[in-house]
Length: 222
Image (cartoon, rainbow, N blue to C red; front, side, top):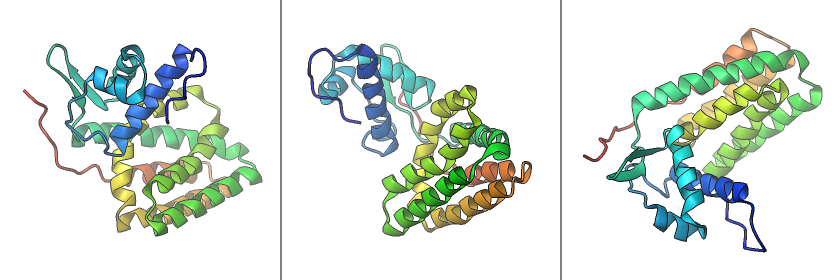
């Protein structure tokens, strides 16, 4: 998300959120590579803001395990790590399972159609090789149940752990295995439409557990 052009005083909260989203997205899409050192002054210049919102964004990203810091030595993009990815994956899968469980009894026909439309866009994006669009459509698909569940705790946990999985999603959706998710989504839709309050949540959980957290681990700098 670009930082808005300066038109008067920009609220601090907006600067902080924009800095967080911009750095987070740069980590997720590989612009800032795993293991890359981060300098708050350079990031502030890149984003066109002061160091304060950048430092606040980096602290928040550290909580999401996307950034590592060692005071007085370095701040860096967290190297890809199987154990951390699996932990984030299991928590995220459990939250989506809970969201669907809470949403299924009350999902409307319009919400089911919104899931279908998102899955069509998802399939089209995969076919076109547009990974950004695929991730956005996947977010829309799963977001229907998350919104319908109306559970702020689920939203909070997903906000913390989903960014780490974005890197896994980019790997999956850029491979032929990503197309498996289209069929998995359709199964979730069918079960939700049938108000399968036990099977639909499990299908949602399994969809997130299908992300493969295997990648080469890197050691942090000494």
